Length: 78
Image 1 (cartoon, helix red, strand yellow):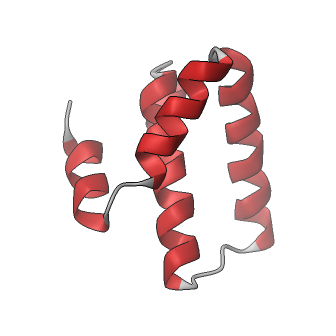
Image 2 (tube, one colour):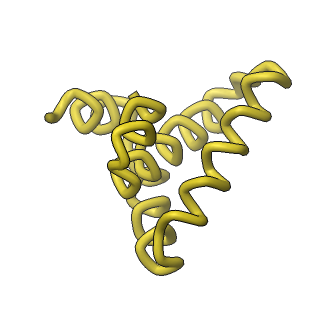
């Protein structure tokens, strides 16, 4: 859903979702395969370019602080 938000130009939402995904994966010890990690990094670079630095930083911090339940609830909001 982070990718969908990015494609839909919901950049702050996408930043929160990508940050939540990255944080939750890191916390769980789950490792993303190399190809998917490269795609993730490209998407984050796009978001950094599209958003004002402060907006990106705040959205990223909010997403990184989400629990699994909060991230799922946020992802399911329209």
